[in-house]
Image 1: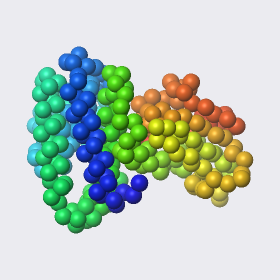
Image 2: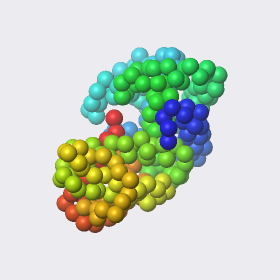
Image 3: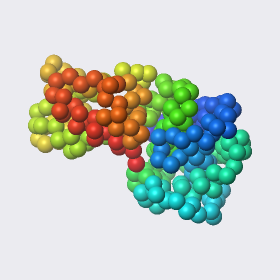
Image 4: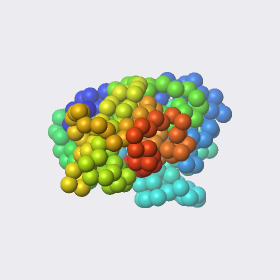
Length: 271
């Protein structure tokens, strides 16, 4: 999916927010407080994170509250997120959902009326200077990943094969050459195949040439290793929500099993 196609990215973002709102309407208070795979965060905290981020990006101001427990914080952005999340922990889930709906509507209204130049001009993003359209692609992925965190925690799967699911898988797949070459140290001339079987389907071939790993078109070469899993497992691994050992029974590795396990163990690539 093209990062610069901001209209499609906005569709992904809005559809994900709508899916989250519909899910939120079904939750009991116990479900709102259920812990997710995000360290220290409940279902409610994941909603609060998106609220705080979108308020800040929209120039609506962040909280002045300071969280006492920063045990899981790894960087300044993480600290900001924790302050926003903690500021809403005393609230009932329904009130957080109401605020989520409000900020989602405000942001949609802003994006719908923004000129094309807003999306094409460069901005500061988590990956450096890039057009705002690229930043929105990251925001869409972040929202969808947190929706999946929520759904896994309360065993209410959904939205797994959406446009935003495809956007998220494609963004995370870009790092596969680095994972295979630099992290897993695949040998010179090796061919690693990563098969993602669905709901989002991808078949990615990566070879190492002159010490650099790169994606290639499928060819007649015999793969050194084939790694196969569904897109839900890939997302859990790539976002650090679970380890290869924890999900090993859901992963098929053929060929050089040791290399395959190194690749799987190095997949965590979320910012």
